[in-house]
Length: 142
Image 1 (cartoon, rainbow, N blue to C red):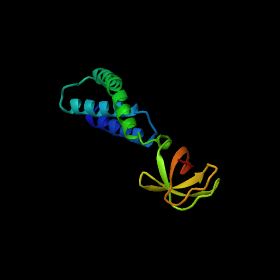
Image 2: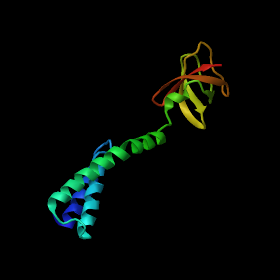
Image 3: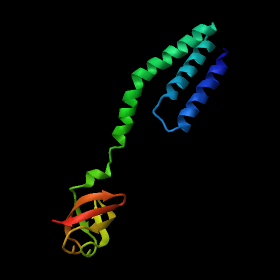
Image 4: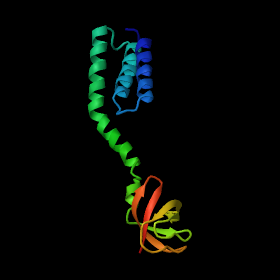
């Protein structure tokens, strides 16, 4: 196969990886195809069966070695879990009656808040976050 066909194949596989929600599978085959194209262009690999064998082995080895560390690194960046807000202190922005809705500040951001306690929350009163439902926090007076 000519070098430029390997390059086109590699770019097409990389585009497929970008277009699909993924688990980082296809990108390793795309990178492998681009490397094989460069090897063919440099005259290091001439026969087609060696090109295909190298392509397959290189892609599978890269998949095995680099996929898990890549996924772990991406998951570390997505660590800001809103469920971690449970137990933190929020401050009511205005009075919130029992069972009522209002606004509260948590981590420097104003949230919609639901007072799940039996007493009213005054403006500026500290409260505990007991649950998170989307963009609304359930709070209870301390």
